[in-house]
Image 1 (cartoon, rainbow, N blue to C red):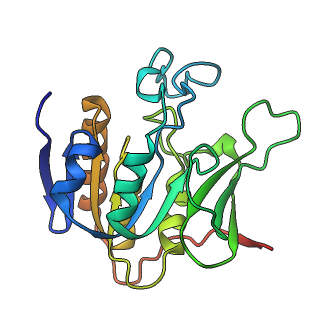
Image 2: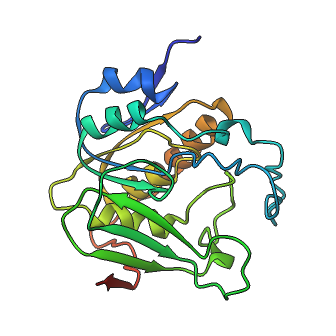
Length: 228
């Protein structure tokens, strides 16, 4: 097995090509984890995997053939103070009062998931982010079959308590969490074991770093609701 490889893209921004189980012991603790692990549902197959940009994800199911095991999640939680983990309803994680819910605003006859749940260990009410999934990527091309909207990941990072400056994504995929962190002025560490997606993440994060950031630049705040 090839040893993990680190690339530093900027001060406070680094990405690793490798398995997170091997990389986590090398990076020490971080402030928070924001991530979207494989759910173990073979997300690279089925309908909706040929996008209007021409990306065809059919047959890319191996990376999503099984979810991370409990030891992997234990290592991730040991590495941070706070965690936001998408797919929380698929994994064995502790009970939590705060789930972050992505409401895709779809009709009842929608055959895919009408919402996705992110488990957190934050002590606050559950929150809802509403974004219609026909514009799932906010106008950005879709580079990964389970890629989340950039606005959603910016909103998730913004839900963290104050002082969470270094964010880790141990399942970086195409790098959306990294782009969100760059846009919000946070430090970022990303880990991805698939070379194809590592290269895409590197390019997307590098492009985000190259864009000028003015002092008054603020991300658009999406509408959110408490779930009592």
